[in-house]
Length: 147
Image 1 (tube, one colour):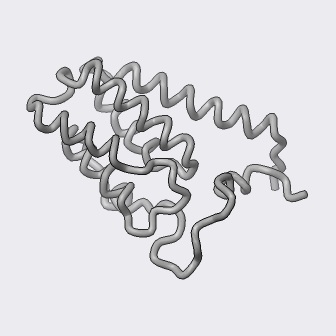
Image 2: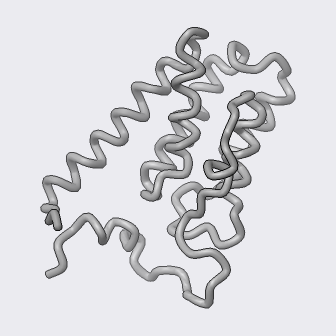
């Protein structure tokens, strides 16, 4: 069992955020889209809320700047932007599947094929009787040593 320190956790998140940023920079290059866009869709359902929120924010900015290069129809661009803005990407749990539904619709609008396994990714617990976490950092607990 690997034990993580605070510096390890910071390095992991820094790597995830940097990777997301680097991939988003490449989405307007036609030759790279088939490799890059599926990765971005994966990051929108990353287990860590801050990574999801950051990816959604950066994707929204990229679509605001260069969305016309990705969408043939302006209505599709508007719908994708609305989905990025309306979803609460930093929620610990997604009991009703709203994040998955939003991500899946964005993927459909961008013509990104997703397998049924990718479409059915679950964030946290669905429908259980468990209440929402009181600590906003609960999902990160697996990365930190138990004291």
